[in-house]
Image (cartoon, rainbow, N blue to C red; front, top):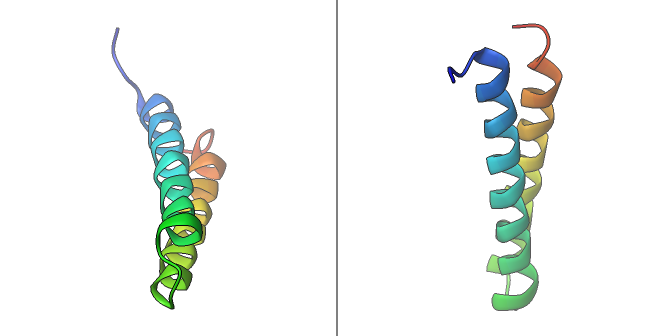
Length: 60
């Protein structure tokens, strides 16, 4: 089974969502000081990039 561009974007979207959730969880549960806000902000950035990948899925 070959992977076309849409399949690669779908996999990238899921990977980005999982990493984003992990970063938000690190910021919420592991780091209680200011660094937790940074982890959560980067996790939200991963969600934004995953959203773009999902939007590009049918157009590339």
